[in-house]
Length: 178
Image (cartoon, rainbow, N blue to C red; front, side, top):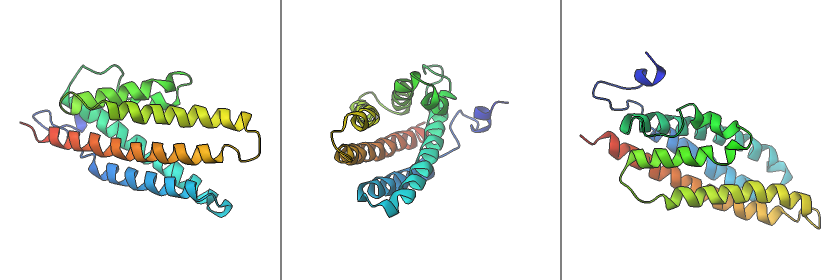
């Protein structure tokens, strides 16, 4: 019996509710976004710890939603469930696998439409990741990229919280369909 089969009851419905992980991920992302925006050196270690915790909980939530999505729409996903976590760590492919996985989860979890939120979150995430890396290289003065980091960090944080909330709501609604 596979791990996914262990997570499924008779009738093909997921047994693992993503809501507890969603609440934890949203809280950690919000706290990390605020801590990052404070800009005080004494909060840097707190921000890093919150970031690591947020990443771990987010990836647990993302994996749970991917496993649930397989139950909702078997065989319709572009990548195997392991890519829900592994896709974030594959050089080069990390720039598109997580987005495609998120879109597959979205589509499997509810009615068509609304993908704009996944796309907005992904564009913001890319802008933060690429922009921060290049801004540090080309900043004309020390700390010149700090405002960019803060603004994009807040945008990505807010959009991630919205994505988590909407995907979780879609999955919860799908879990109760007959």
